[in-house]
Amino acid sequence: MRRAVLLILFLFITATTSMAQVKVGQDGTISGLAFNDYYWVVSNHRESLEGSNGFRFRRIYLGYTHRYNDSFSGRLRLEMNSEGNYQTGGRMTPFVKDAWLKWENDRHEILAGISPSPTFALVESIWNYRSVEKTPLDLQRLAGSRDFGLAAKGALDESERWNYHVMVGNGNSTGPETDEGKKMMLSLSYQLTGQWVVEAYGDWNSLADDTPRKTVQGFVGYESETVAFGALYAFQQTDNPIAGDTNLDIASAFVRAALAQGTTGLLRVDHMFAPNPDGENISYLPFSNEAESTLVVAGVDFQLSEDMISLIPNIEAVIYGETPDGMTPATDFIPRITLFYSF
Image (cartoon, rainbow, N blue to C red; front, side, top):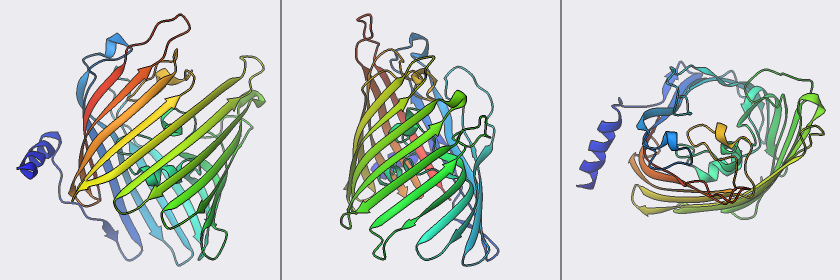
């Protein structure tokens, strides 16, 4: 009965063909993924958004990876997504998400071009539900998931317990350089055991007009075959002699656990200790920029095909503290049904 209900919901959201990784000759691979929602804005701090509902694609990837030889490989990946402001209905436009050339040996890699930044690669791999929500710094627009520059990553010891990821980039995500500054990023992680890992991350970004922005993050994670959880704290300081300094800090904890064969439960809580000045510009989940916030994400993942197709009923709720004038913004509450599939 459960399988029948899930199948009906799956067909209701979208129809998909059978999916398998596509080989191009002996050296190339075409791959992709998509996740889309049916969403309903039950309540929101913006009254104009209440009652909004509909279908949308939050992300579509299509990429090609080519291996030249044992040392060199390259990737070109495009991304498309719906506009996330609930007010405009423009068509999805593809843009370059990854475009890198990689050299590698047994323990080290060097990447040139647009590649994943070190900021939350480890956090995202243990959270494992980008299809439901971005990692905290990504969601709050405190950092980007990609940058254009030169990166190196790998293991510092033969046992591969100490790992590093360093990058020098434009500091403008996938866009071109717009100022003279650069962004320097460094992640160091240590595999305590086969399940436990700790990470320290820091970056320094020279913005326009020589305004420096510094970010630090600490993370501890655990991952086994049946359960995973993690906790992080991050702090970001922007020194602006004209507009004044901005200090933002965030704490987050999450857990995901197998509930039954092919079924996983997930729960996450993020807390911003101060209002995010850029909160109203967050796609799909705008935050009030006048009060501190607590985000709760909860859902159940029904895997219709192992690691390939998932149907994930979930909710997102944002609970606010008081604004400077003593008011409390209304809670944002958005139930969704998310469909994820990859090939």
